[in-house]
Image 1 (cartoon, rainbow, N blue to C red):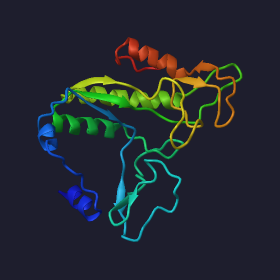
Image 2 (image 1 turned 135 degrees about the horizontal axis):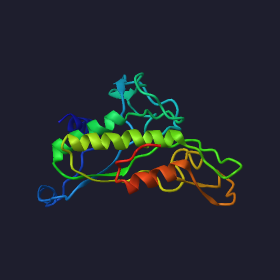
Image 3 (image 1 turned 90 degrees about the vertical axis):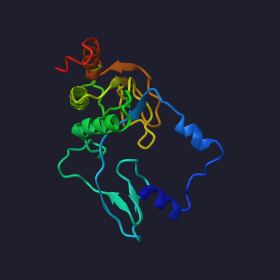
Image 4 (image 1 turned 30 degrees about the vertical axis):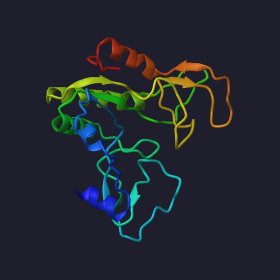
Length: 211
């Protein structure tokens, strides 16, 4: 009701064509896929407040005049790009979705973007990524003991790719690609430490999360 009222005030209510409501009521999805990176904390925003810096991402630049704006949670650590790390929030999200929809859940994205460094001997040491994934996978296991139905888990991502907001410098992959924002480099691929760690996690079906 609150969301609908907001949509009405901002002339943004959806249009229902004949048959739409019936189609939605008769829909029976087999599972729910969702992305998770972090939680968000907000505080009140006045009607006059607007976002000063237009170059933001979907996590750090949240604001809606008269409603809310992003607020730094002092109880959480952040990534190099300012995204809060909240693995316990992951479990809470899974529990809430399970209790609300009673459907198997598929994690379609979960991962850590960071500045990775390629060493002279072709190595990429990324213990921060391993720790992030370890904590979140452990919380999936806890959610399963809570009774949640977990269909699968897909970390983001297998290989470095272009970030929508930060370009190539923000790396997510298990495999490093030798290129930067404007220089294609050699485009050679290098397995990061997290590659070998996650290979072991897959082999043990998530049971072995040790280094």
